[in-house]
Image 1 (cartoon, helix red, strand yellow):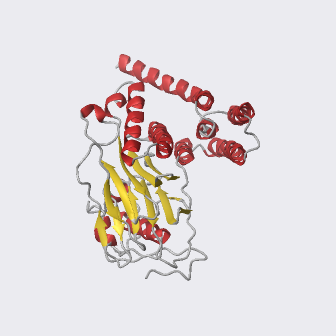
Image 2 (cartoon, rainbow, N blue to C red):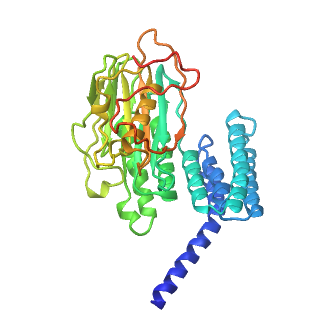
Image 3 (spheres, rainbow, N blue to C red):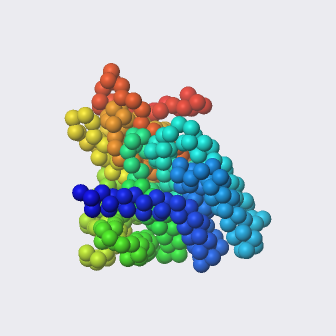
Length: 408
């Protein structure tokens, strides 16, 4: 018992030392990343994360020092790269300064309330959001809506991700789910999104993008020690929507099947022609990735999601069934579709879901269809409503200014 107790104390001490060193490691890592990569790659998520990590564990003074060091690093890098006058550089600086100020506020709240655990979760969510890019509302004539919904306040942070990028080959996008929780998952998300951003611009084929992600995750797995070096993986769906062709190409690596919702309420599950292992598991076998092509007509919406949707269960253990819940329904646009899904899942689970959920909807507008605004929000679960049925039909969630929109 004495040895076990001593080992536990040593483990706690090691964890504390790591947490104290983590803000400095993030800043140093960001500097190294920025120096060794091309100028258009940014390490701002690492700089923004440093004061956020310091906030719940450091004093106000040390949190201020972490925020100041992060801001100084960003300014120094822009001066070094001679990019201080570019709008992207100014935006990155404002973002890091804002996050540093928020970290000071968070530090004061934690110190006064003593709710370190709850605040650590909020900070981890903010760190994850810092590395998940916000897709544009309209890109290459397509309407885009995205949503990241966190599970209950006492649940762990997951590794769900999404990204959309306009490339010479068309609009390319990815939705994925990294194995694991917490900051390790956030780090893996950053690896996947960073590799996707670069590969989407450079690779001529969607299969080439997939292989670049595979290699990036294999390198990350080799860098890690212990179980993560052998069991780390990411399920993902990658899609490519060429301009003016009315089709979508997809590669599915062990991820839930995307859905195609048509203007008349019909729905199709896009089941892969051949099952494939998740990304990062190339050591178990190799096979050629082959993109499958499906029609993407005007008025249709492509819906991609993580297993936080398809594995959401109610009190009786019944899984949420997206095709059954959405088939026959018609929505004015992708925003309304995601509003309806999140509302329906919340009622299905009575606010008791334990996994994060990422949703990405891309609509090809019909002729004459107006543009619509889209917001990306982090939605928390609400308390259950016993008086409501556990299987309501999805309905569009109206927000202020949208009272004239109704589900058709």
